[in-house]
Image (tube, rainbow, N blue to C red):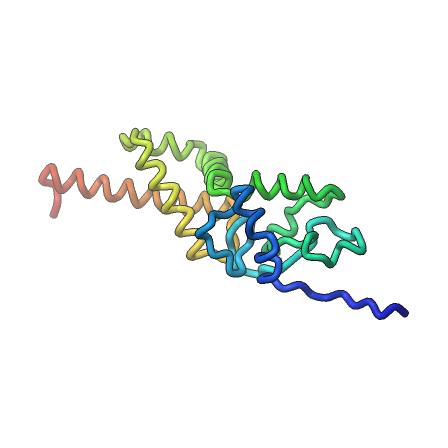
Length: 180
């Protein structure tokens, strides 16, 4: 009757609209190139512009009610009527610290030992080495995995720790004349 057609908003349009807000909130850095990545987990798999608050016509199709999330994060996004709650969720759950804690928590649940305890047991007490491990894990997950979740992070933490243990053992054997 009125000829209203829902216009599908592109990811690029939404990114451009919210760019300064994302930087101000610390969700991304100025030098970050969003280029179609999920604002929460930084995945580029199954990313689309979605509504911040569902079904609040007529605002539901405006850029002010859109954000860029992957399918997985869209499912986890709070279904609330207050957009501030959604932004709060995104701000608190989008950083590297959040994902590192999620992966470490899952690691401890699975292996009944924390990542930090594993490092302590290997004689690693330097915070820069812990930071390096976290950075390697997050980088590996972002490069090699389509969807970031705590289970994947826990597995990559485990792989990295096993690799570190192996390298330490090889160095020990080499330094003590056990190398073949």
